[in-house]
Amino acid sequence: GAVVSQHPSRVICKSGTSVKIECRSLDFQATTMFWYRQFPKQSLMLMATSNEGSKATYEQGVEKDKFLINHASLTLSTLTVTSAHPEDSSFYICSAQVGGNTGELFFGEGSRLTVL
Amino acid sequence: GDSVTQMEGPVTLSEEAFLTINCTYTATGYPSLFWYVQYPGEGLQLLLKATKADDKGSNKGFEATYRKETTSFHLEKGSVQVSDSAVYFCALGKAGGGNKLTFGTGTQLKVEL
Image (cartoon, rainbow over all chains, first blue to last red; front, side):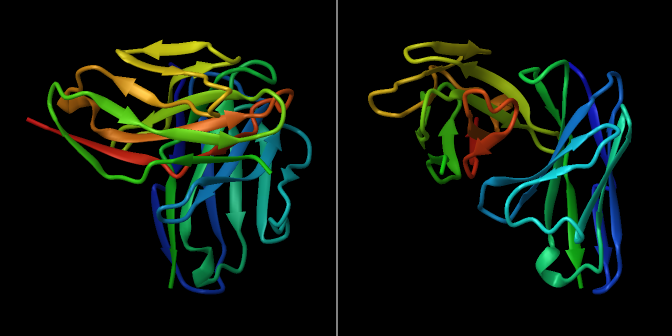
C-alpha cells in the first residue's frame, strides 16, 4: 500500500516555542490530508482537513492560529504548533487520501509532542 | 453528534484463541463503518470496512458485520496469532462526509504463545 511518513516521530520542546511536524506521502500525490490528535486512552480527534493549494478547514473548537497547517505541495502537509504549552502535549497523526473524496486513507506513524 | 464506543483494553489472549472486540456507534443516517489496525511503530492501516447494513467486511481472517438494529460492528477472528498483536480502532464515516472519520479509543490486543 501507499506510504505516509511523519517527521519527527518524537519532539520535546520548551513552553512558548513553536514546533513543526511534517507529513509526507512518499509514493503518491495527495490533494487532501487530515490532521488528528490523540490524548492517552482517547479517540483520534480530527483537527483539520488540509487541501493542497488552499486554506485548511478546521474542526469546531480547534484554534487555527494555534495550529497552522500548510499544504504547499501534493506530497507534503505541515502542522505547526505555535507558542506551545504543556496542554498541547499529545500524539499528532496525519493521513493522506488517495484519489477522490472516498479514496482510501493512509496514515502516518504519528508524532509525539511533549511540551515542558 | 456521531460517536464510536469500543471495549477497553488491553485484551490478552493465547494464540489460536477466538477474538471479539466490541464496537457500537451512534450516528444519524447510514454511515460507513471501518476497522483500522496499528502495529507497533507503524501508522493505522485499513483492516476492513462495510458500507451498508448487513454487509460483512473481511480481511486476513478478521470479520465484522454491520448491524444496524444493534448499531454494532464487532470485530471477530476465529484463531488469533502472535502477529495480530496491535491496536485496533473502530471508526465511522458519515454518509456523504467523505473521509472525515470518527474513531473509537482503540483496543490493544496482546496475543501470547
